[in-house]
Image 1: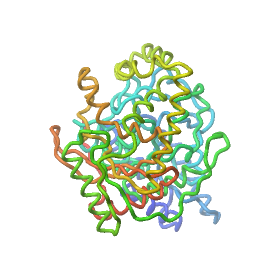
Image 2: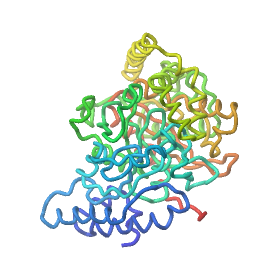
Image 3: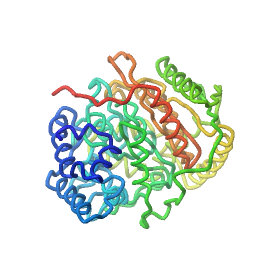
Length: 471
């Protein structure tokens, strides 16, 4: 049973519910895998084996009593260090918060536990969850298990690195500007940013989050299969009264025409050939499955949405965040904040109100677009995954990073769901590199994203488990 960690979440949960294997066996297997490979990648930065095994024992006891153990019965899952887990520090990668111990679980953790999951460990993030690279002064750097020369992505870089290396069957991440989709892309796994309001959010251990973050942040799953993402989303999307903005939208919407749009260069994005090739291959697979796929030169505004998303995210509380980053002394956070000063520092109440007004207008334009094309294929990034720490290599490199991420930043402004689908590898200047595509749909139509993702996945090779080299 030592290889139980290799199974999909769907298969493992089914075997545990049938009592073919125990949750304790699955937990022990996951802990052994964590101990074997985590030292090479530093994806999980806090875990307690005794707590993991105790959770598994609860699942086994419930099954022994003939009770329903939940759709994630006994499945080991990781959670990001920026959400509350009772008894653990909600560090968000920041030394200033290393003693900020949560007294209660966030809705994310509670919903996973109610679904029967076993929380395996807590995954790394850049300080303040600000970068598409993962490292901080408190927990250290996380490496990409497929190629350590590449970024593992951020801010859910620990989540993506862990699940790519077989540490946990599902991973939790959060996404304001690509923080689920980009790590999934960089580590060669799948990642879903749900619609705004789909997954309840609340952190009692942290001060009230900035308004901009409240208006854009969403938790979602990362996994090695689309079926596992579907299972993870169903668990995460359960209601919780602590979030008044949670939306009781059904997980499956009405039938939609099998019609998709493909846009290779939205708003003039300079998409590199390997990414274009992946998008065209995804479109071909959809076409062969009976979908009509139209290539469009333009879609509703994306660059404007990205600019306004950064402003809404960072403007409220910007000076306080800069002061905290200066006190922390984290270079990556300081570089990220300095690079966006012009976009975030000068906004006043009237300016913030104007951003919200324009948000409604752009959301309307996009919803009308999805009435004609229920699904859109876009680049996750204009480039293959970046060399690690590229954003710290000067102003030109910093600008290059942010320019390439335009679609990741723009999609959340309208509250849309976005799915990063892994599509194998390509060659980059840093060697073998994962590549993938982004699937976007109208609000609360994650089901369409996942349906298209399953078609793309089924016509290619399954996501493999990375074997990171020892440091």
